[in-house]
View 1 (cartoon, one colour):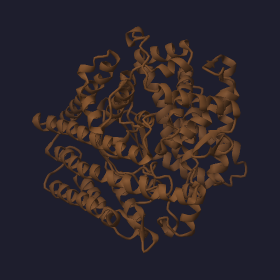
View 2 (cartoon, one colour):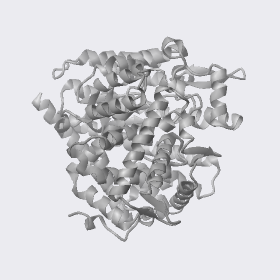
View 3 (cartoon, one colour):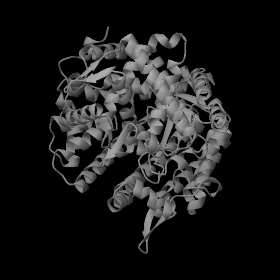
Length: 621
């Protein structure tokens, strides 16, 4: 076991060092060493775009951080039609896919050449890689047909999200889940047959791509059965998991898809090694039917970090206090009890992504709680993955941007940067409170039907991210432990996050996080912790303001918990803070709306401009 964990650590360190090398592209940007950015010149040529300062920054961000929001804004300035923009974004995906597939191949070769792990786990890495290649090819078709195809057609025809959702419900176009009820997600897409839309499983709608995935999964399964897992004795757990995936991908009956994917989740929950395979789990991209995205990866746990975590107990204690405030008659006891049981069964993995493919070339998560199938979660609990090393490394690598210096007070930024570059231990503690707290926060106040009942108008996810983050924050605010020394940094992190999320206004798959930011801004402005003078923010983090903000969060979160337990439509709660205007949500409060509109205009204008007036060395003590 010790030898195996030493090998895991070697692989982990190799991936960390490789990412540090890739992050050097940011350093070359900051130092105007454009001769070292040949890969970015190649990228621009592939997109057939003239390379300028803005595009160079956007392409580095797309390649290194895997986000395309800044690239979209830069392309929009070039006065191109929507279809042309779609084509460029797809070409960018293909370039990134090719680059990262070779990048991951190098990791595989390092493991093989150094004879690391064991034959069984080398086979796991190889199998995941080969499946990943096929998943990544499918991703292009998935985006074209679902996101840029049927979803845009539906919105064009029915004008509003609410009207689309009503049409889908009336015409029985949502997949059926457990007990024949309408599912909260789908493993299918809508296809026009004889002039009418019908739901088709992935294997029918994407026959060529899914058949290729199944073929490689079958090869993977055949190889696993020939080798023993001498370390964890989990060969059969992996084998059953791969077999469950083959069955689920091959299922054609749309009313059986949720059942078979629940079997995948059940098999997956039994795998408890540091080498975790991720499968299609999340569904942010598809706003209407929640078609599950094509995630596929290995998450590698860091052997140094696998210690008992206190966050679950703190969230449970907080939820009991909030529940007592809300439910004096105990009429919601069943939901509260359901969530608490899920909380108590969580498996926590701290590490970083080792190999990743498909939808993850469009952005990695900083943490994740899964599965979303609450029936499975009630039986097995959930897994939480947290990638703090990855986030800290990326945060330190990113350059300073002119927009931050224009909007935030200098003293605020100076404090944030000194903390980021010098306080490793405290930074990880803040991440634990805010990000791991967020993942535990997702579990509270929900049962098996919450999402499908509350999502009739399509906005469940648009309050769920705020619920998750605020669960972590409120548990911290209500706790009187030694963590309180981190209060300033927890709140400043929330301020920075709330403002930064405005940049995601026009990126559909992260709309829930954008909406989360708008709700946070209501608390920050209402308590006067932040104020806007028309050009920049004033931030007052004095004792009275912190006290008022904490009170706002506790009251707002209590109201939200009640809304969840009574299973009211999500839009009703969201509309207190934000309403859709044309295509995008905007704050209800006029002052906040003015700030959001101003910030987004400045983001479009200078979002990729670097701030060269200060250097990272200025903050490293």
